[in-house]
Image (cartoon, rainbow, N blue to C red; front, side, top):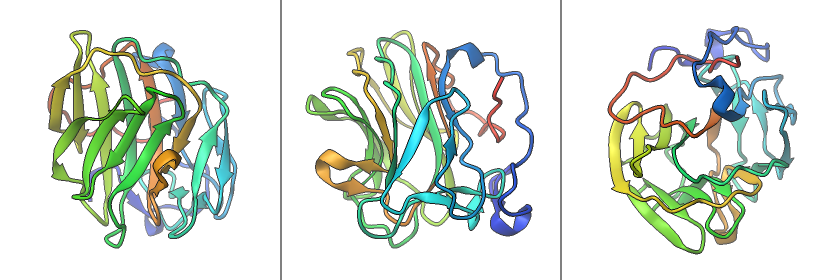
Length: 235
């Protein structure tokens, strides 16, 4: 188990979770932060930045497992299940960091999707038929960079996509660089879906997502790093 990760039995269930540590030196650049804690079965997803997220299908908080707080977002093993925001994700003109913790069960059939900004040329985070993460731009280039190794199964994995000021777009899994390319084009902003890429009917079926954060104008990671402590700071 990666340090800082908790199974359902490691903490009291359904509580508010541990107090986020801080301060975050890039807090003013954070545009969305979800801790995804709460009571079993809750469909309330509090975004520290005040954005509203709504459940589609049987997406809900589960206390089965989580990386902090003893809970996480659980997606249904069948059907359309994801959460959608009312926020317009800012256009990614330059540097950014898009990160989350994901638990892909062994039985999840690839390809599948983790995140989708609902816009032409919007940011997409999926996995291909080999289970390798792919970053793309909807309807423009849906395979900009692919991870060199598949996403591990049956464990929470910290996933980060970061672009620096030189246009290097990188994918990291548990702090290890697994893909890199130069891509300086913009990603258009729109509302965001977690757990789905509905345009291709791809879903993170039966999976869990925790500690989702988007940081604008900052590449938090440019080389191998130690997986950050959780919960992410909210100040």
